[in-house]
Length: 215
Length: 215
Image (spheres, rainbow over the protein chains, first blue to last red):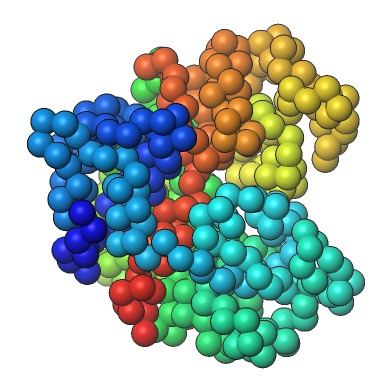
């Protein structure tokens, strides 16, 4: 059942849908569903059945012809293939409102994304305890990233501070950054940056509503 | 300069990139840049030049051959075409940590997405003032949506409450919903839902890091 991933070149759009599949499949598992065929899975995820079958084909053979996919083994295999079947230790930079909200978002930890250290450059915030973690000065980042085996950086600063935050993370040896600040950042080629931008969804809603597509 | 949008069928992926172009172009405008050619714009947005030219072609002719794009007129025309050159009035449902963080996110208002009413079903929260807005009971939603000309609903409840929140919004006549809760919701066909899901970016980071793609 747990064959390794077929190809290293899984398209970004597929990974996006896999996140949705995991979300839906975990809901189904909680409801006690053991087997699901591709069409109802597709419907719950708002994609078409052939797309689901194609996406899941990247991960070997989970389906049983004429029966469907076994929910729990499918969740486990997708997670294993994506590398999210283990803990990822995260440093968060920028302990403002958004940072605090995300610190309190219990789903991160449940899904293995564990914020273990938090940083800010505001001297009034340093030393404060937020959701059980002490706010550290950004100059301590290099040492702490090393000591705490941190692999991922999360930027939740105001937009004008994001570039500096990313510089601290890169200097500390971080090569994977998730940027929640609404500005682009420049990093060396060996560093990957993913942007979380709420506005494209707002723009999509506004565009479709303007065009009368949802009437 | 301000020709109307060529086609109603702008692909989702294009709208996503347009959000990035606006972000980068607004940064350039603030720095006093008046004209930019497609290649440096493409580089700042992490896409290729021909993609930028193709995307912007949906919006008529903004470019001056051999010179580049005029930054401010381009921003204005993209916004006009997307329907984000005006105010959109929003009801937020779920005044927890995430809801509060987003209420404090001044960029929403700057970009015309104005949260004007907030709702929760927790009797201990009703009546509380959060960032200048009073928390209302969800049973007041229908009346307030009508009176306040609210067009968009934003769901920031825990995942298990999202379906109920969406039901309240739909009953109040809302046809555009932005769901920040990490669960899928079912709505009638005339209602469009956009999901803001942080996890696919986490999964992409984790997958690439596991594959050693950023070493």
